[in-house]
Length: 408
Image (cartoon, rainbow, N blue to C red; front, side, top):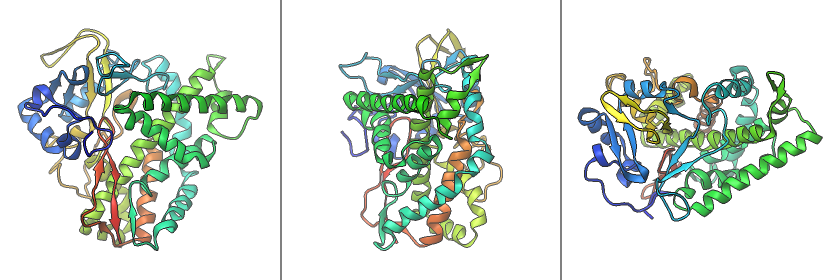
């Protein structure tokens, strides 16, 4: 294992255009110059590693590919990961039962419609008081110490509890939720036993919750899903469990990565930090810029029919990485894309994706990020990265700090 979290040791990359490696330490720690080189040399890179895949780096190409439905399908979504003896050598770990992200139309259409009301701006606003109280309780636990791991003790503590609050499940299990999600998306990348055990725990937990709601319905999202109908028919328990699985996994790792990356930036850029402390009204705009600059998520699609993209043939079964982080650094779309400008006005970033699979929970993620930064800055206006402290980043398709030593 390398020093990065959940990253296997791999042969060095000689040519990023034809042999890129999303688990390479250089890619994990600083992928931006790699994408910049590829845009000029080979904007759609390819590799045979981990079963082979394509990696677009231009904004225009990523957006176009994201809209190539169903030829680039989400019906069998994958996590690109190292192969092992317990699964096929393709290196593709096929995630199952996570609608609507694991579906193409028409199933995607109605399954997405089911959850959108729970993530509307009005619905999201109802969770803001809880989120503010939570952030302050977390800060209470470390503010007297003068130091904190901004990732483990703050950023990673917020989304599990907010998602639990939204779903109506026990918020006291937040540490277990964190362990399960890391087991699926991070540690499990190089440990299939951990990954499988984590998946079983997630599905087992929500199966129990659904069974309980059958007897004891509540005023929560799970009960709302159970009461819903499509074409006059109730939603299956299997579908509901899969949707809860999606909300837990997708709603935790992505958001804590964004919060952690924002704290990492502000700890290392005192001018930006001081501007936000002095004028908190800039925080919503800063959130958008930090999402653009440090987008955490690279989704994946599977080629479902023979197709060609700008002269590049793609065959059934090929994998394509929807490189939203790379698109957000494209100079053809953003002026000075590698400069974080917290007052940037033209900012059509795709941190939440684009097309029919754009993140349904974007309003909730924005709220959590806004509140987390606002409360942290209000109570700890002066902070910096700990001298000599090691910042580690998770590798794979969700990038964000996993250790973030901060002093104040």
